[in-house]
Image (cartoon, rainbow, N blue to C red; front, top):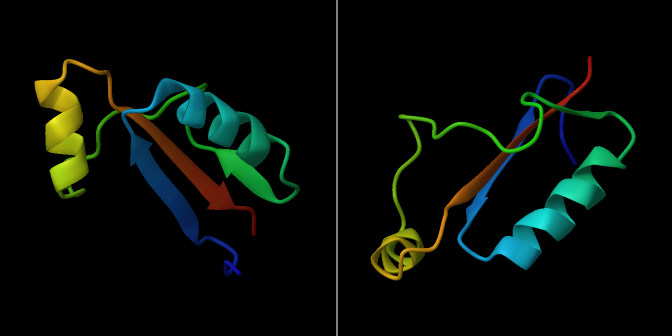
Length: 70
């Protein structure tokens, strides 16, 4: 449950998962994507150990940033 103005932010190095999540979130009533597709990297977001492994494996990191409408 998100309060109005709350956000859901995720990052993944697994392309099929990123595509699936993007589709599902875009079709969730009340959520709005802050970007046209994938989000730019947010400097406030910490890098996870999983992300570091994806970078080493040269996989793109896809980020999603959705906000619950007011």
